[in-house]
Length: 280
Ligand code: 3HC
Image 1 (cartoon, protein in one colour):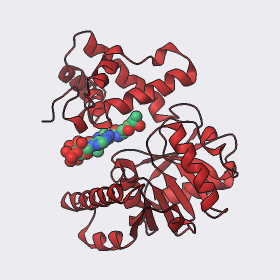
Image 2 (cartoon, protein in one colour):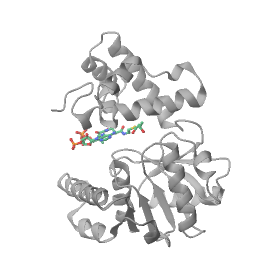
Image 3 (cartoon, helix red, strand yellow):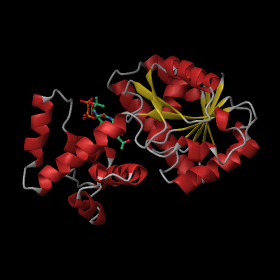
Image 4 (cartoon, helix red, strand yellow):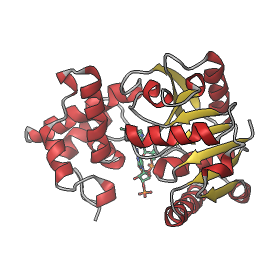
Protein backbone atom coordinates (compact mmCIF):
# COMPACT_ATOMS: atom_id res chain seq x y z
CA UNK A 1 0.00 0.00 0.00
CA UNK A 2 1.64 3.21 -1.11
CA UNK A 3 -0.84 5.59 -2.65
CA UNK A 4 -4.09 6.83 -1.16
CA UNK A 5 -6.68 8.84 -3.04
CA UNK A 6 -8.94 11.00 -0.87
CA UNK A 7 -12.19 12.22 -2.41
CA UNK A 8 -13.31 15.51 -0.89
CA UNK A 9 -11.31 18.05 1.08
CA UNK A 10 -13.84 19.25 3.64
CA UNK A 11 -13.29 18.88 7.38
CA UNK A 12 -13.07 15.06 7.19
CA UNK A 13 -11.31 14.65 3.83
CA UNK A 14 -8.59 17.15 4.69
CA UNK A 15 -7.97 15.50 8.07
CA UNK A 16 -7.81 12.06 6.46
CA UNK A 17 -5.34 13.34 3.86
CA UNK A 18 -3.09 14.76 6.59
CA UNK A 19 -2.99 11.60 8.72
CA UNK A 20 -2.41 9.49 5.59
CA UNK A 21 0.54 11.64 4.55
CA UNK A 22 1.92 11.62 8.09
CA UNK A 23 1.85 7.80 7.97
CA UNK A 24 4.08 7.93 4.88
CA UNK A 25 1.55 7.35 2.10
CA UNK A 26 1.54 9.36 -1.13
CA UNK A 27 -1.77 11.18 -1.09
CA UNK A 28 -3.84 12.72 -3.87
CA UNK A 29 -6.84 14.77 -2.86
CA UNK A 30 -9.58 15.16 -5.46
CA UNK A 31 -12.15 17.94 -5.51
CA UNK A 32 -14.87 18.90 -8.00
CA UNK A 33 -13.51 22.32 -8.90
CA UNK A 34 -10.30 24.33 -8.67
CA UNK A 35 -12.01 26.70 -6.21
CA UNK A 36 -13.00 23.82 -3.86
CA UNK A 37 -9.53 22.32 -4.19
CA UNK A 38 -7.88 25.61 -3.35
CA UNK A 39 -10.09 25.96 -0.26
CA UNK A 40 -9.29 22.37 0.78
CA UNK A 41 -5.52 22.83 0.39
CA UNK A 42 -5.73 26.03 2.47
CA UNK A 43 -7.71 24.19 5.13
CA UNK A 44 -5.03 21.45 5.28
CA UNK A 45 -2.23 24.01 5.50
CA UNK A 46 -3.98 25.83 8.36
CA UNK A 47 -4.73 22.60 10.24
CA UNK A 48 -1.11 21.51 9.86
CA UNK A 49 0.14 24.85 11.17
CA UNK A 50 -2.24 24.70 14.13
CA UNK A 51 -1.22 21.09 14.97
CA UNK A 52 2.41 22.18 15.03
CA UNK A 53 1.64 25.28 17.12
CA UNK A 54 -0.17 23.06 19.63
CA UNK A 55 2.84 20.66 19.51
CA UNK A 56 0.54 17.77 18.57
CA UNK A 57 2.82 17.17 15.55
CA UNK A 58 6.44 18.30 15.19
CA UNK A 59 7.90 21.01 12.94
CA UNK A 60 10.14 18.44 11.25
CA UNK A 61 7.12 16.49 10.07
CA UNK A 62 5.53 19.50 8.38
CA UNK A 63 7.58 19.55 5.16
CA UNK A 64 7.50 15.76 4.83
CA UNK A 65 3.72 15.70 5.19
CA UNK A 66 3.17 18.58 2.79
CA UNK A 67 5.47 17.08 0.13
CA UNK A 68 3.41 13.89 0.08
CA UNK A 69 0.08 15.63 -0.67
CA UNK A 70 -1.07 16.55 -4.16
CA UNK A 71 -4.35 18.09 -5.27
CA UNK A 72 -6.33 17.33 -8.41
CA UNK A 73 -9.76 17.83 -9.96
CA UNK A 74 -9.51 14.60 -11.99
CA UNK A 75 -10.26 11.14 -10.56
CA UNK A 76 -7.94 9.71 -13.23
CA UNK A 77 -4.95 11.20 -11.42
CA UNK A 78 -5.48 8.53 -8.76
CA UNK A 79 -6.13 5.56 -10.99
CA UNK A 80 -3.03 3.73 -9.70
CA UNK A 81 -4.05 4.26 -6.04
CA UNK A 82 -4.12 1.24 -3.71
CA UNK A 83 -6.81 2.67 -1.52
CA UNK A 84 -9.47 5.33 -2.10
CA UNK A 85 -11.14 7.02 0.87
CA UNK A 86 -14.31 8.91 -0.03
CA UNK A 87 -15.38 11.82 2.17
CA UNK A 88 -18.06 13.66 0.19
CA UNK A 89 -21.27 14.98 1.85
CA UNK A 90 -23.51 12.41 3.59
CA UNK A 91 -26.01 11.82 0.82
CA UNK A 92 -26.40 8.30 -0.53
CA UNK A 93 -26.97 9.43 -4.13
CA UNK A 94 -23.74 11.55 -4.05
CA UNK A 95 -21.73 8.68 -2.65
CA UNK A 96 -23.16 6.15 -5.09
CA UNK A 97 -22.35 8.45 -8.02
CA UNK A 98 -18.75 8.76 -6.79
CA UNK A 99 -18.38 4.99 -6.30
CA UNK A 100 -19.81 4.23 -9.76
CA UNK A 101 -17.19 6.48 -11.28
CA UNK A 102 -14.38 5.21 -9.06
CA UNK A 103 -15.20 1.65 -10.04
CA UNK A 104 -14.70 2.56 -13.70
CA UNK A 105 -11.59 4.69 -13.31
CA UNK A 106 -9.52 3.21 -10.46
CA UNK A 107 -7.53 0.01 -10.96
CA UNK A 108 -9.54 -3.14 -10.22
CA UNK A 109 -7.35 -4.23 -7.30
CA UNK A 110 -7.86 -1.04 -5.27
CA UNK A 111 -9.97 -0.96 -2.13
CA UNK A 112 -12.74 1.65 -2.15
CA UNK A 113 -13.58 2.95 1.34
CA UNK A 114 -16.27 5.36 2.47
CA UNK A 115 -15.98 7.64 5.49
CA UNK A 116 -19.75 7.62 5.92
CA UNK A 117 -20.90 7.92 9.54
CA UNK A 118 -24.30 6.32 9.02
CA UNK A 119 -25.11 5.27 5.44
CA UNK A 120 -25.21 1.65 4.29
CA UNK A 121 -21.92 0.24 3.01
CA UNK A 122 -23.94 -2.42 1.18
CA UNK A 123 -25.87 0.28 -0.71
CA UNK A 124 -22.65 2.11 -1.59
CA UNK A 125 -20.74 -1.05 -2.59
CA UNK A 126 -23.77 -2.36 -4.47
CA UNK A 127 -23.28 0.13 -7.32
CA UNK A 128 -19.78 -1.24 -8.02
CA UNK A 129 -18.54 -4.47 -9.56
CA UNK A 130 -16.24 -5.01 -6.57
CA UNK A 131 -18.48 -4.95 -3.45
CA UNK A 132 -15.97 -7.31 -1.76
CA UNK A 133 -13.45 -4.45 -1.87
CA UNK A 134 -15.83 -1.81 -0.52
CA UNK A 135 -15.60 -1.05 3.20
CA UNK A 136 -16.38 1.70 5.70
CA UNK A 137 -13.47 3.64 7.21
CA UNK A 138 -15.21 5.98 9.65
CA UNK A 139 -12.80 8.52 11.08
CA UNK A 140 -13.79 10.84 13.92
CA UNK A 141 -13.50 14.59 13.96
CA UNK A 142 -10.98 16.20 14.46
CA UNK A 143 -9.25 13.41 12.49
CA UNK A 144 -5.63 14.26 13.42
CA UNK A 145 -6.47 14.12 17.14
CA UNK A 146 -9.10 11.41 17.56
CA UNK A 147 -7.59 7.96 18.10
CA UNK A 148 -10.45 5.83 16.82
CA UNK A 149 -11.11 4.41 13.37
CA UNK A 150 -14.33 2.44 13.03
CA UNK A 151 -14.16 -0.18 10.26
CA UNK A 152 -17.48 -1.27 8.82
CA UNK A 153 -18.02 -4.40 6.79
CA UNK A 154 -21.09 -5.15 4.70
CA UNK A 155 -22.46 -8.57 3.82
CA UNK A 156 -20.20 -8.46 0.75
CA UNK A 157 -16.93 -7.04 2.18
CA UNK A 158 -14.17 -9.68 2.15
CA UNK A 159 -12.02 -10.55 5.18
CA UNK A 160 -8.95 -9.67 3.12
CA UNK A 161 -10.27 -6.13 2.55
CA UNK A 162 -11.05 -5.71 6.24
CA UNK A 163 -7.60 -6.93 7.28
CA UNK A 164 -5.88 -4.59 4.80
CA UNK A 165 -7.71 -1.48 5.99
CA UNK A 166 -7.11 -2.47 9.61
CA UNK A 167 -3.34 -2.50 8.95
CA UNK A 168 -3.50 0.84 7.13
CA UNK A 169 -5.52 2.38 9.97
CA UNK A 170 -2.93 1.17 12.49
CA UNK A 171 -0.16 2.62 10.33
CA UNK A 172 -2.04 5.93 10.58
CA UNK A 173 -1.77 5.63 14.36
CA UNK A 174 -5.43 4.80 14.88
CA UNK A 175 -6.93 2.12 17.06
CA UNK A 176 -9.58 0.26 15.13
CA UNK A 177 -12.89 -1.28 16.08
CA UNK A 178 -14.97 -3.41 13.76
CA UNK A 179 -18.66 -2.75 13.30
CA UNK A 180 -21.48 -4.32 11.36
CA UNK A 181 -23.24 -2.44 8.60
CA UNK A 182 -26.33 -1.17 10.41
CA UNK A 183 -27.29 2.53 10.72
CA UNK A 184 -24.95 4.47 13.01
CA UNK A 185 -22.54 1.51 13.25
CA UNK A 186 -21.26 1.43 16.86
CA UNK A 187 -20.21 4.86 18.11
CA UNK A 188 -22.94 7.02 16.57
CA UNK A 189 -25.58 4.44 17.47
CA UNK A 190 -24.87 5.24 21.12
CA UNK A 191 -23.56 8.81 20.97
CA UNK A 192 -26.15 10.41 18.68
CA UNK A 193 -29.26 9.35 20.70
CA UNK A 194 -27.47 10.70 23.79
CA UNK A 195 -27.02 14.10 22.12
CA UNK A 196 -30.67 13.99 21.01
CA UNK A 197 -31.75 13.31 24.60
CA UNK A 198 -29.74 16.33 25.74
CA UNK A 199 -31.65 18.47 23.22
CA UNK A 200 -34.94 17.20 24.74
CA UNK A 201 -33.66 18.42 28.12
CA UNK A 202 -33.12 21.90 26.62
CA UNK A 203 -36.61 21.82 25.09
CA UNK A 204 -37.98 21.04 28.56
CA UNK A 205 -36.34 24.22 29.89
CA UNK A 206 -32.95 23.08 31.20
CA UNK A 207 -29.89 25.27 30.55
CA UNK A 208 -27.26 23.90 28.11
CA UNK A 209 -24.43 24.78 30.53
CA UNK A 210 -26.10 22.78 33.31
CA UNK A 211 -26.58 19.71 31.11
CA UNK A 212 -23.03 19.82 29.75
CA UNK A 213 -21.49 20.32 33.18
CA UNK A 214 -23.55 17.36 34.40
CA UNK A 215 -22.13 15.00 31.80
CA UNK A 216 -18.60 16.41 32.06
CA UNK A 217 -18.37 16.01 35.82
CA UNK A 218 -20.90 13.26 36.42
CA UNK A 219 -19.91 10.91 33.61
CA UNK A 220 -16.34 12.10 32.91
CA UNK A 221 -17.05 13.13 29.32
CA UNK A 222 -14.34 15.50 27.99
CA UNK A 223 -17.02 17.88 26.78
CA UNK A 224 -20.79 17.91 27.21
CA UNK A 225 -23.23 16.58 24.58
CA UNK A 226 -24.50 20.03 23.54
CA UNK A 227 -21.05 21.55 23.05
CA UNK A 228 -20.14 18.42 21.10
CA UNK A 229 -23.34 18.75 19.03
CA UNK A 230 -22.36 22.35 18.22
CA UNK A 231 -18.89 21.17 17.08
CA UNK A 232 -20.26 18.27 15.02
CA UNK A 233 -22.90 20.55 13.44
CA UNK A 234 -26.61 20.39 14.29
CA UNK A 235 -27.43 19.75 10.61
CA UNK A 236 -25.13 16.71 10.65
CA UNK A 237 -26.62 15.53 13.95
CA UNK A 238 -30.16 15.84 12.56
CA UNK A 239 -29.20 13.97 9.42
CA UNK A 240 -27.60 11.14 11.41
CA UNK A 241 -30.65 10.84 13.66
CA UNK A 242 -32.89 10.70 10.61
CA UNK A 243 -30.75 7.87 9.19
CA UNK A 244 -31.15 5.94 12.46
CA UNK A 245 -34.88 6.71 12.64
CA UNK A 246 -35.50 5.58 9.06
CA UNK A 247 -33.01 2.71 9.15
CA UNK A 248 -34.56 1.03 12.21
CA UNK A 249 -38.06 2.49 11.85
CA UNK A 250 -37.95 2.97 15.61
CA UNK A 251 -39.35 6.00 17.45
CA UNK A 252 -36.52 5.93 20.00
CA UNK A 253 -34.38 7.68 17.36
CA UNK A 254 -36.97 10.41 16.58
CA UNK A 255 -35.11 13.72 16.28
CA UNK A 256 -36.09 16.21 18.99
CA UNK A 257 -38.41 18.89 17.49
CA UNK A 258 -36.16 21.60 18.94
CA UNK A 259 -33.20 20.23 16.99
CA UNK A 260 -35.23 20.41 13.79
CA UNK A 261 -36.29 23.99 14.55
CA UNK A 262 -32.71 25.07 15.22
CA UNK A 263 -31.55 23.63 11.91
CA UNK A 264 -34.49 25.32 10.13
CA UNK A 265 -33.40 28.59 11.75
CA UNK A 266 -29.86 28.14 10.39
CA UNK A 267 -28.39 27.52 13.85
CA UNK A 268 -25.98 24.76 12.87
CA UNK A 269 -23.59 25.26 15.79
CA UNK A 270 -20.02 26.53 15.69
CA UNK A 271 -19.82 26.75 11.89
CA UNK A 272 -22.69 29.28 11.66
CA UNK A 273 -21.75 31.11 14.87
CA UNK A 274 -24.83 29.98 16.82
CA UNK A 275 -26.01 26.68 18.22
CA UNK A 276 -26.67 25.87 21.86
CA UNK A 277 -23.85 28.34 22.49
CA UNK A 278 -22.81 31.51 20.68
CA UNK A 279 -19.48 31.58 18.78
CA UNK A 280 -19.65 35.14 17.47
N1 3HC B 1 -15.90 18.32 15.28
C1 3HC B 1 -15.36 19.42 14.73
N2 3HC B 1 -14.47 20.22 15.37
C2 3HC B 1 -14.12 19.86 16.61
C3 3HC B 1 -14.65 18.73 17.26
C4 3HC B 1 -15.58 17.93 16.53
N3 3HC B 1 -16.13 16.84 17.06
N4 3HC B 1 -14.12 18.64 18.49
C5 3HC B 1 -13.29 19.67 18.61
N5 3HC B 1 -13.29 20.42 17.50
C6 3HC B 1 -12.53 21.65 17.23
C7 3HC B 1 -13.02 22.81 18.08
O1 3HC B 1 -14.08 23.46 17.44
C8 3HC B 1 -11.78 23.68 18.17
O2 3HC B 1 -11.67 24.44 16.97
P1 3HC B 1 -10.84 25.86 16.97
O3 3HC B 1 -9.42 25.50 17.26
O4 3HC B 1 -11.08 26.36 15.56
O5 3HC B 1 -11.51 26.70 18.02
C9 3HC B 1 -10.64 22.66 18.16
O6 3HC B 1 -11.18 21.45 17.64
C10 3HC B 1 -10.08 22.41 19.51
O7 3HC B 1 -11.11 22.04 20.41
P2 3HC B 1 -11.01 22.39 21.99
O8 3HC B 1 -11.11 23.87 22.17
O9 3HC B 1 -12.02 21.52 22.70
O10 3HC B 1 -9.49 21.99 22.30
P3 3HC B 1 -8.81 20.86 23.15
O11 3HC B 1 -7.43 20.75 22.58
O12 3HC B 1 -8.99 21.15 24.60
O13 3HC B 1 -9.61 19.50 22.86
C11 3HC B 1 -10.48 17.65 21.66
C12 3HC B 1 -9.59 18.89 21.62
C13 3HC B 1 -9.81 16.55 22.51
C14 3HC B 1 -10.61 17.13 20.21
C15 3HC B 1 -11.86 18.00 22.28
O14 3HC B 1 -12.39 19.14 21.63
C16 3HC B 1 -12.85 16.88 22.12
O15 3HC B 1 -12.84 15.92 22.89
N6 3HC B 1 -13.77 17.01 21.12
C17 3HC B 1 -14.78 16.02 20.85
C18 3HC B 1 -14.32 15.06 19.81
C19 3HC B 1 -15.34 14.02 19.53
O16 3HC B 1 -16.00 13.51 20.42
N7 3HC B 1 -15.47 13.68 18.24
C20 3HC B 1 -16.40 12.69 17.82
C21 3HC B 1 -17.51 13.38 17.27
S1 3HC B 1 -18.81 12.26 16.99
C22 3HC B 1 -19.34 12.65 15.51
O17 3HC B 1 -18.64 13.24 14.73
C23 3HC B 1 -20.74 12.27 15.27
C24 3HC B 1 -21.15 12.53 13.84
O18 3HC B 1 -20.57 11.57 13.00
C25 3HC B 1 -22.64 12.53 13.73
